[in-house]
Image (cartoon, rainbow, N blue to C red):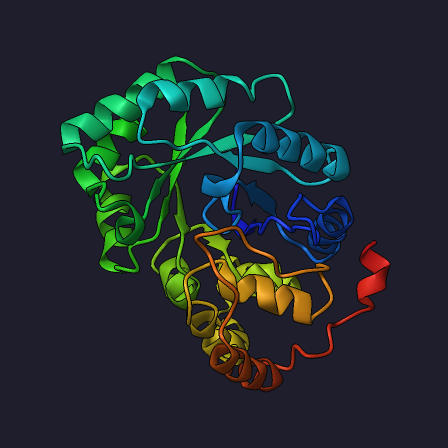
Amino acid sequence: MFTGSIVALLTPMDNQGKICKKSLKKLINYHVMNGTSAIVALGTTGESVTLKNTERNDLILLILEIADGRIPIIVGTGSPSTAESIVYTQGLENLGVSACLSVTPYYNCPTQEGLYQHFKKISENTDLPQILYNIPLRTGIDLLPETIQRLGDLRNIIGIKEATGNLSRVTQIKKLVNKDFMLLSGDDATALDFMKLGGHGVISVTANIAAREVAKICFLAKHGNFFKAYALNQQLIDLHHALFIEPNPIPIKWVAKRLGLIETDLLRLPMTPLTNISCLFLEKILNRAQLILMKGDVCSYE
């Protein structure tokens, strides 16, 4: 269902710290026009943990309204509380959302059996397709391949965003799950290698500002043209790394504003603005990646 370049969409704010509809419209049009396969809203990059519940709901309705069926919308619904995750997920039913991205419960660090029961309970309480999200660096817990195998047998758990950066996981998981189970990279720097090993795509931070390029890399990989895919990816490799010079989404918001895709790079505490030294570094990387001048007129996405 979901392959190729899937953007982990940032959440644009205006100067008053509210969700910026104008910038959101520009971002979504940018992705529709440049080959992005789907949008993930309310993920890490979307600052979901600093949005109020009412803002989360408003944001999803706004994204669905702007997208207007032109691109699938996946929504982050993960929580350390199973009951809360179920409430989030059920609240999306009948809205037109295509799937949910459910991160492993963070902070409370359950056992593998606890992880299985958590996702199983969510699965039993919704008909929406569920994509697992494994990112131990952020959550403090690792969803192991054997647990993924068990979860993959459940009716509406359709894939995983695997963000460990450990490429050996691709082969391990592929051996254990059915052929329709989607393997999506959550790490831009290793995503192409991930796809070469049998992955189906990437949920990308870089795609926020290089949508066409990331989509083309995924297209080339899907069709086995890895020579051209690696050549194009090499132009972005420093950018993949540089976008994590400070915690995500600090750098990506700064770059998106620098390129004119959003009006401000405002973040919510405890996230703070990009430091001056990082600004200078990212400016050099952008020049090297030839992204200072966007391909196409940014105004055309409004």
